Length: 83
Image (cartoon, rainbow, N blue to C red; front, side, top):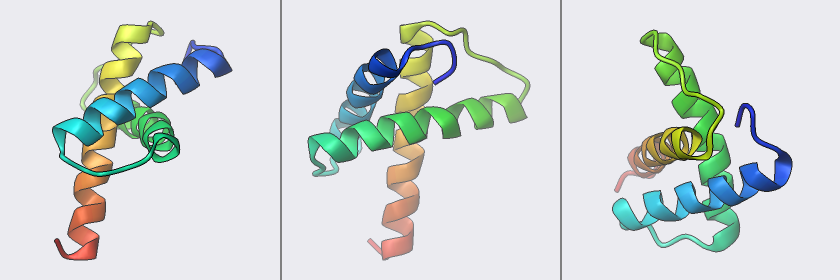
């Protein structure tokens, strides 16, 4: 998560991962939510970069990118598992 410190990235990643797991109705634990949110932010920022958009280094924009990326990751995992 660009522009955020380590503790803030974990906190925002956890919130984004939790929100994505609630939205996608995935039953994941707190550690998985944090990982989903942080990796999701990387994926979300990458996808936004492909379309020419960027996010500012604020909690809200990085949280949105994390939420979007975590939803994509959950969907990909479900697709690969065959659900």
